[in-house]
Length: 263
Length: 225
Image (cartoon, rainbow over all chains, first blue to last red; front, side):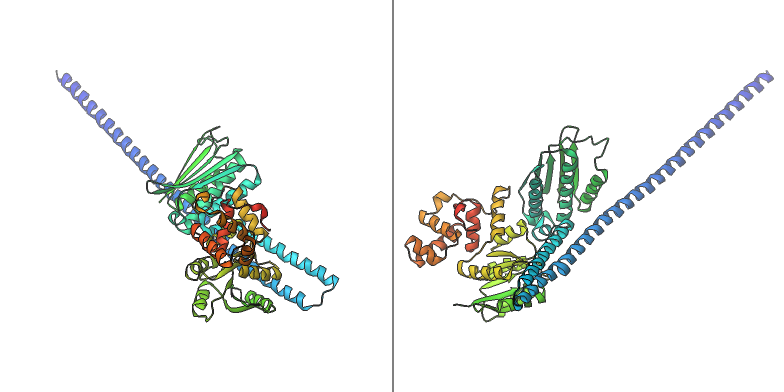
C-alpha cells in the first residue's frame, strides 16, 4: 500500500517535473522566438532606413545633376553664346573699317562661318543639357519639340495630345521631372521596344493631372527582367520627388504603358 | 526719308554698343535708347519722350526676360513692333514668339545687313519673315502641332475682298501697293486690314500672316521667301 502511495507520488512528482520542463521549454521557445522576431524587426527597420537613405541619396543626386546641368547651360549661354554675338558684331565692324582685298574677304568669310558654327555647337550642347524650350515655354512645348525630334529620326511616329494649360501642370521642377520621365520613356521605346508608334497624352481627370505614355512595341515581363533597370528606377525616384504616382502596364508582346498622375 | 526710331534690349552691354554703332551708319535708323533687361526696358518706354517704333529684343535676360516683356508690351504698347534677336533659334522659340506677336525673328549671328533690311521691312510692312521663320511655320503645318487659336469657318466670315487683301499682305505687299493692285484707296485697304485683325482675332499684321498660313487661308505658293 505504502509502495503504492510512493509510486503514485513518484508518478505525480515525475509528471509535475515533466510538465515544468515542458513549460520551461515552451517558455524558452517563445522567448527565443520573440527575440528572433525582435531581431528580425530591427534588421528590417535598419534595412528600411538604409533603403530610405539610399533613395534619398539617389534623389538628391538626381537633383544635384539637374542643378548642375542648368548651371552649365546657363554659363554656356551667358559666357559663350553672348560673347560670340559680340564677336560677330565687332568683327563685322572691323571688316567695314578695312578696305577689302580678296584675301581679307576670304578670311572674313572663314571667321564668320566659324562664329556661326561655334554658336550652333554651343546651342546644341546646352540643348542636350537642358532644353531651353522647357525653361521658357514649359512642358507642353518641350514635349512637342521632343516629338518633332523623334519624328525626324524617321524610326518612330509620335503623337502628342494635351488637354490642359501650362499653368495647371505645376512648378518648374515638376515640369522638369515630368519631362525627364518622358525623355527616358522615349529612350526606352526607341532602344528596346522596337515600337512604331508612341502616344503621349496630358489631361486632367478627377482633380488630378495625368500623363499617359504608350508605345506599341514588344513590351516586357515586369516580374522578371527590368529592361534598363537603373533608368526605370530613376523614373520611380523622379515621380516620388514630385509626389506623383507612376504605374506601368506591360507584358511580353503587349506594348507598354506608363501612367503618371499628380496634383 | 523718314527716321525709324529703334530701342535695343540686350543684357550684353558690348552687344548693344556694337549694334548701336552699326545702326548709326544708317541715316534712316535712330537708336533712341537701350535697356539691359525687360523691366529696364518697360521703365524706359514709360519715361521716354518718344516711343520706339521698333524694338530689337533679346530673349534671355536676367530680372525680366524678353519673353515676359514682349507679352507686357503687346498688351500695354501695341503700337511698338518687335524683332527678336536671339541666340536661340529653334522652332518652339520662333513659333511661340511669333504667336506672342514678334514681327520678325533673327539669330544673333544674322548679318548686320540683314538686321537693317529687316528693320526697314518691318517698319514698312509690319512684319518680315526670313526663310528660317517661313520654314518653321510651314513645318508646324505638316507636323502635329496645332495652332492655339480656335479655328473659324473662313468661308462664312471673310469677304472675297478681305481674302484678296489677306493674300497680298502675306505676299508682303505694302498698303499703297495693295491699293494699286486692287484699284481701291489706301484707306479702304486699311479698313480691310482692321476688319481682318478683328475677325481673325490677331493683334498685328505678323499675327495675321501666321494665322493665315497656319489655317491654310491663303495660297502659300506665291509667298516670296
